[in-house]
Length: 248
Image 1 (tube, rainbow, N blue to C red):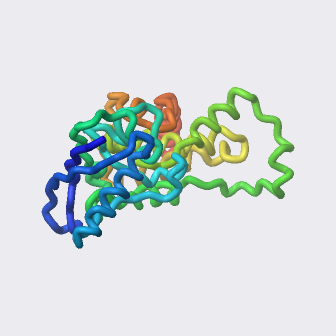
Image 2 (cartoon, helix red, strand yellow):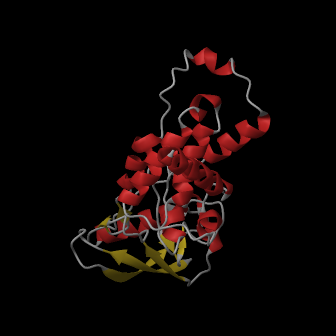
C-alpha cells in the first residue's frame, strides 16, 4: 500500500518548521512507527536527513511515541498509542498528516520530538510518598478496599505520554496531574500528605505554563489508557481543601 505522508520538519527549537511530503510503500501489518522506520531508511538511502521521532518500548507502555496523526493525538484509534497503531487502519493512497504534540509547555526539540520534561517536574513536586512504609512485605499488611485499590490502579495506568495536553484546547495537564496524585492519594500510605501533594503539584503545573481545565473532556477521549475525568474532580476537591487549610 502506498501512503502519502505530510510530516512536520523542524531542525531546532529556534528554527521555523514546515510540512514536507513523502510517499512510503507500507505493509498493512506494520505498526505506524515501523512505517516511519521505512520512511527514514528511504531518506537515508537518498542521503537525506531522517525524520526525528521519539520511541522506546513500542509496546504501549512508555508513552514516548507522541505524535498527532490526522489531527488526533496517537491517531484515529481510541485506547491506542502511536506504536500500537497499525497501517491496516489506513487505506491505499491515503494522505496522512503527522505532527508533534502542540502545546506551549511541550516545546519542539526537532521534527516530531517534543520536550516533555515539564511532566517530570510536576511529579518531582509531589508524586512521591514520604511516609515510611517498611519492607516490601509490609505493603500487604494494610487491608485496602477493592474499589479504592481499583481506582488507584486505574490512575496508575497513566503513562505520561501527554496526549491529554495535546488534545486539550487549553493545553491543560489536569488529567495527567490528577492521575499521578490519585494513584498515590487513594492508598493509605499516600493519603496522609495528599492535600499538600496536590497543592505542590498544581502549583508546579501552573508554573510550567499549562492551561486551565474547562471540562471539554477531550483529554479522557484521547488518553490511550482511558484515565477517567473522575480523577480531576478528586484533584479539585483536594485542592480546595488545601486552600481552606492554608487560610485557616
